[in-house]
Length: 143
Image (tube, rainbow, N blue to C red):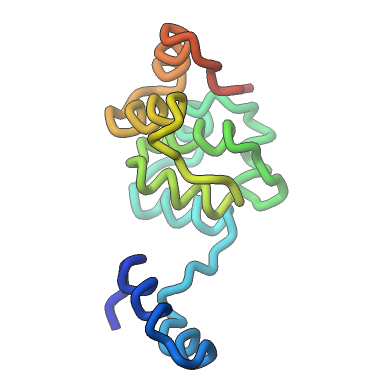
């Protein structure tokens, strides 16, 4: 069965009479990855080198390896640095944030709007920090 989008799942949930049946019928539509698993999937899917992503993220190399190994629960800032380094779309970054246990980008938040713009336009971490500073917003915490 093809994966359902969020709106389809929400509609089915509203119409559901039995929660167990809803969960059983939609089991393949629920995300069940750890952050490390999702990062590894992205590396394969996008044909990226972990070493290059870590370098581009400007995170401490040891700390970044712990994130990829599932031994660290990184801050939202560090997850966004990885998203920029992987050249993720804003939607892909939202999934990454979800798996890390953080709020998605919220376009009504000025700083989040800048971060979404940076992702959409494939800005580097350095370019994103420069843009944030130029707009008098706090830069990503890197390193």
